[in-house]
Image (cartoon, rainbow, N blue to C red; front, side):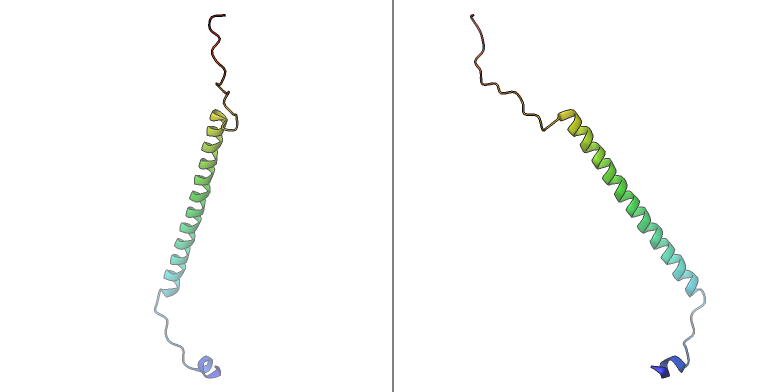
Length: 73
């Protein structure tokens, strides 16, 4: 291991560091944008569900229609 560290180091191409940093920054921006988009879609879906549940009220049981009509009394 010591021979590897003490040996001659290869030359780094010019601009490699700046291109790597730019690529990393680009990936980070895309990842943050994807996360924000995901949270926004989740929030909109939750809002749509709440509006639907508030208007339809699926937890109420509809009234039963088993009684005969009251005609001829």
